[in-house]
Image (cartoon, rainbow over all chains, first blue to last red; front, side):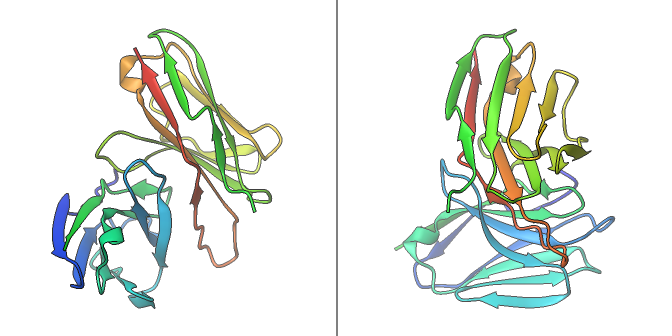
Length: 106
Length: 116
């Protein structure tokens, strides 16, 4: 919804770093969220960006460029439990992307 | 403390029937959101309540869908004349409204609705 684009699926190796990109329509932008959703479960909050730059929280970091309508989620030291869908969502109502399914392989 | 709860967890109904889905938000959260999610898709925004009033109902797909939150706490999503295309997981989320504008949403486990 609302022109939020993110890759459908990605695969990475345990211990590696992966970057999940999200582009969005900039009009009416009030902030961008990243959520993690394991199969069959509800989404859980990961990060929130409203200003440009990088927000770091442990193994997870999120970056925002408002002028480019672009964000990414960076996951370091991947663990098997990180296999999930990662949803990008923007404020001004709450529009979610379709999610990026991340497969972490040993 | 208790998180967001939704009942029922599963609902199977027949085409044309009426259903009600209930959401109990986290105590004290003023904002409440309804979404529906189909397999392989992100949550689709339906409606957002601020207190008792619907602040944004632009996501409701048609007039068969209606939601209420009469006392600013529990909310009920009502679907009339259900259609097979209404089958999805209906998610409810709540958030406190802070001055900084960060409205982190806490999601309930969802109600899986199947319309036969």
